[in-house]
Length: 339
Ligand code: PBG
Image (cartoon, rainbow, N blue to C red):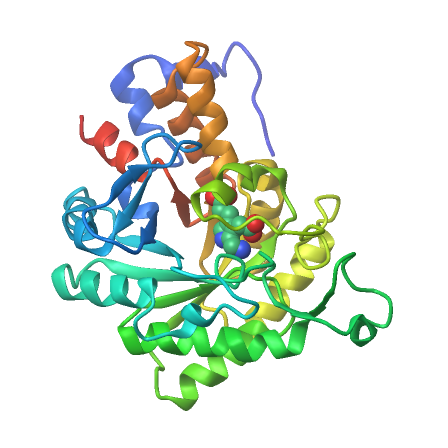
């Protein structure tokens, strides 16, 4: 890079007034970049604040409609749905039930606000009584001694369940499914299942590089999904690794992912940047619950300015290379930008 030196070059010239600074901006955050997560529960007339994530709620399907309209009105193009089932069991039956809470929510939203793009999280942990993201084998021998402390995760059997879940969401009218389980081969399995049933237009946003992160803490209260034994480090990625993320992304791209996601966002901006530089697909980043809630807690103590922090962080995720961001601040951002 050729650089001319002071005093002929004065970088501060580009910062001399508010309007000029606006003109000079390299990265812009807009509501069109954002995806808003929604947590759906059974019952009627429920809008209950999630205590670990102030400003976010558990919604019953009937109350979701007004919320979906408001989200669309704010210019946010998409939502991602998470469901809390009526009952949990070893394989999570409600996950692929046509009358499951997520399936009902998809139909209701697509009916009332057809233009709002509906994405669904596809995973098992909210639906299983053991809280893991796959089928747990009762015969630990299956894993040849390399299983979880309390059982053994059956990767390939899980692919069948995930495909059934994705298909049931497609039948309900979903626009895109987002597998977040980190099983090997799930993108290919889901793509094949969708294509087999002629759902060629239902896309896949894969949680391609999803790390075993402590930043998911508040979400596990929101989705009631903590593992009942062991942890997720046998399938989610080790935070020490970056090259491995590129291999995970490459596999998902080869298997047919339409969008690849990095999660969490803020402690992994280096991964966002490397994926952006190496792949041409749209890149999403998930600004996760812990990243949101820790700011909320500091704001409650008067230590941080929520709007400035959120805007600075979300802008940095875009600057790192994300095309879209899943964030619990989506509605706030749309309002702040409109003000
Ligand atoms: C389901 C899932 C999780 C999140 C999104 N999908 C939890 C986890 O993997 O433990 C976390 C989202 C957040 O923290 O905001 N597997």
